[in-house]
Image 1: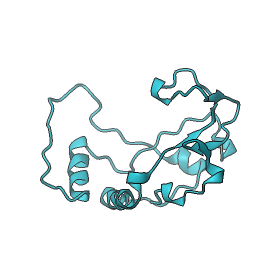
Image 2: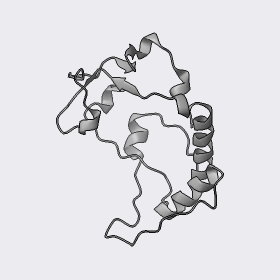
Image 3: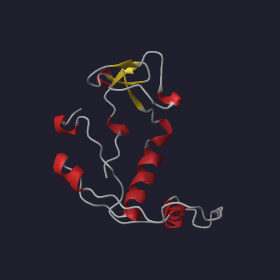
Image 4: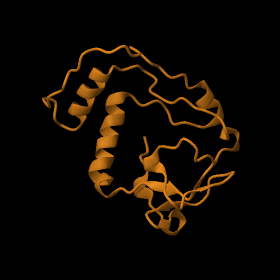
Length: 139
């Protein structure tokens, strides 16, 4: 990993403020300029009502950016997508630390298992050969 102290650690990441799925769907509709877009309200299920992540561990290991509220983060995300997203291609690693139990859609015949992740790529080219600053979302 880029931060050695993060190796083999689990980090739970989420928003600093809790939001319901309904609040999130309304905020997304507003951010993309479709506040009247219909929402399909499903019956309530036996699931967690409110989940909030504690970021103390993330803050101790990484240097995360300052808090951004939901409307501002969505506005920036929509702006990035309109500028870049339609031509965005995900960056893939040429190796992973553990292949076991990876979702089948993530596996590729050329994906190797290695003690340390190596060589990210975009499509068939190594990312180092194709600088792609437009793939970042700076919040």
